[in-house]
Length: 377
Image (tube, rainbow, N blue to C red; front, side, top):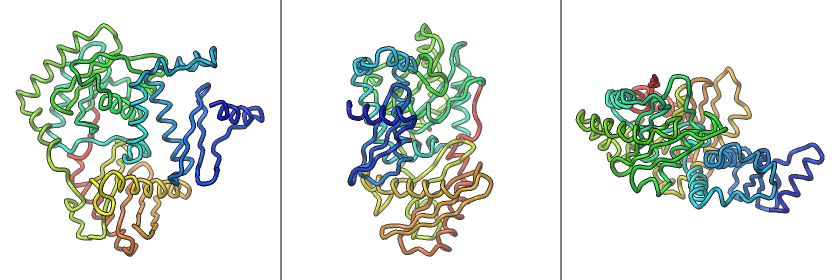
């Protein structure tokens, strides 16, 4: 750590910031956030921009645990070891965040994924969550694993995708939260990095969790009662059963899209206005976690190249072929981004046709794939 601090300090003395260094096959990427120095060391071929995005999320995860006041603490006491404050849970959260970012496009695209669910059921769930709110409640989030079932919020405050990703990582990877009803402070950096809000977390059934967030640290028993009423109403209406069935249902695949173009292997679609994405599970040759890592690396490379040529006003279409696959990217600013992966010898014209058919399918199914209207009070 002393060597890293010395490298950063030498650049700062020259009124400059070090961003990255290359040594043999290894790339060192630096991110300086006040007194916190973050370094990524990689030989996976990821770009400086991609590794910087990962470091930014690690920094926000640290802030979510310690709040932004840790910056002042470190400025006043530069030798202070914050690992004692963070504990083992923080190490687990950061490890899981980095692991997930290798296979999940959410972090790179800064968006969330929703559980595929009947629109009417989703709207009823949101109404139920909203109708039982307390005076101090800020947000209510129902998660199925890492997929969002429903999100309700106070009108004055938006829960941005970055904060929702941090919250999801916290809820799904903190084993202590699964033992019963949990009451814990958490900082949502995009809402306010200055202090904590309080989260009531309860796993209703299996990986189906309800998180209620309040501004007041004395609301545990109120939110406990709110949870009881919410679960009771969801059970009576049958919506809890519908959510469980949707979550347990066999995942849809690229074949369900029915493009009739069998060179299509995978796609990722981002709905820009809603900050949500959708993608099917990967199939051969990208099946499994290692295959998904390779697929995500291809997507990240294409995203980098698209960003260098993209215009803020006009759409961009980019096609790239390699020995393993071909990727077509289509970006329409303010509307959508779609990245489709094909077998390596697919003609560009066929790839464009398949992409159009995927877009038509998404349009037909958007009511079940996305949360189209925010639920506020």
